[in-house]
Image 1 (spheres, rainbow, N blue to C red):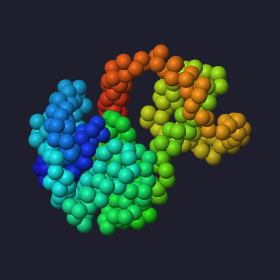
Image 2 (cartoon, helix red, strand yellow):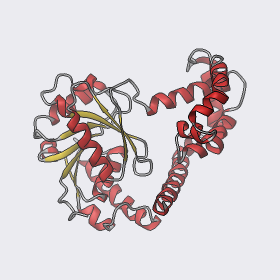
Image 3 (cartoon, rainbow, N blue to C red):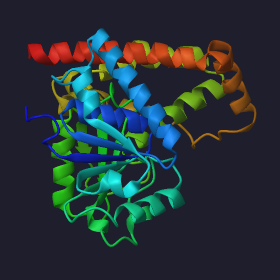
Image 4 (cartoon, rainbow, N blue to C red):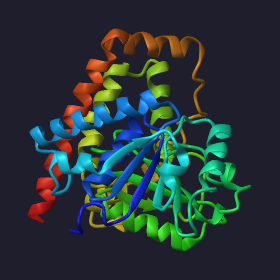
Length: 319
């Protein structure tokens, strides 16, 4: 591994949960990281949180990389000056709220201070890059690098170019993300919602239909995922599941293709997320996870995600 800080500088624009995760991910791989936020107190709070999280990750055995928590934290700085954060950066990750006008302005500001080789990436989960980079002088350097929350434990990153993104920047972004331990997937063209959310929304739509039409409870439909499909998909995806559940994909389609088509024809239109159906789902979820206990439940979720990530790391070492 290169000497800490010699891989280059990374600017993180936005000090929220995603920004803090990105900072730890890059520092864990030895990059110099500068976290920017317009409000100085948010920067200092973010650094305090990052320092505490790195210590906890070490205790749990989930700290990334070979550097100690102290060495990683020494690579992370904070500032409330955008120019200071992104000047000379090899990579900039924008993590501001999901507002189109805000992202467009932030990228317009960033491009004033970066050089011709800087990758400018957005963490947006649904907004296509062409929507906020079209008027930029450096639009060929812009793309989306959409992480899965929480990024430290769920390593997938969707790399999404616009039609004017230089392919060399997509490839460099992929290599950097692999270098820091993420799992990038590169879309060949932009599409609203990208891939992860389009698949997720398809699942949500059918789950919602089944609950609101009285077929199954919200609690039981969630069990279908975490005790069934989720167990399969934790290590392989749906297409390979099909391939392995028969004598290859062609044989699977011969066996089950007509059934898939027949059942799929009964799905119906997309549901309406309002009215009596919404009230019913809200009531069921609130009874299971009361609003005043959500933070505790999130910690429970993240602890299990961390354990799963650790198991997958151990299994990968055996292969």
